[in-house]
Image (cartoon, rainbow, N blue to C red; front, side, top):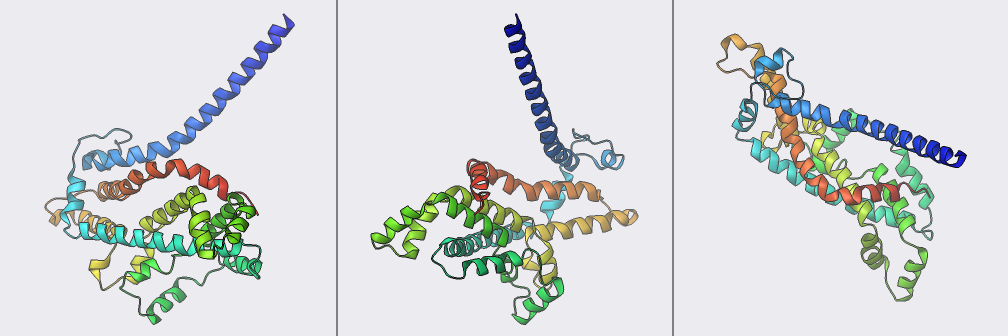
Length: 297
């Protein structure tokens, strides 16, 4: 009886803590999902219900007026193409720079690698600021060009550290030495050994670069003033929300008014969908890549 009682007690304790863990996971999951559901509900709800704060998880007075307002701007599709081009180019360039530097500084035979790594990490703590960045873009003639959205942030020291640790953890030195015996050079070793074995971390960092560039609009707000046709999607949606707010304040002289909160919710959904559609294809690499990159030197 004592053995059965002990087994029952251990089983009960184990099930209890499993239930607690599942409950905590459920709470964290809901905190991520419910706000997005709330935004979607607001984007397809009638203005009167949104103004009265009666929209929570389910839409009320279903309407697509906010999305119609978004697509009424003929340049919105062009801004979408600009964002896609900038994001793809930015991600490819960022991964190229990160992979090359991570490979070079992860090799023990490279002299001065610790100093170079320290200089990269140093930029995580100190930066020049917005005004020096703007002056630099102006002196280089990059204002009102797409390059001001691609080049300045194309290298991330944080992503470099993750890539460097991943290469050191996933590729044994013996494999590199055997490639050198066969006559392979650095470029061949990088492309034929390191990159194929680093697919999880490459997919993870590509997602980091793409999401960071896709969601950013502050640099475009500062650097792109005259060339309206070069505004990315996020900046275009920002101006759309500002215009909706101004129109809402002049309700007495406007014919059709849409609550700026509804327009803002529609813009959030419209700008989030591309990333949400891409993420499932990279999810299988995401956890593996983060875990590999977390291994310290």
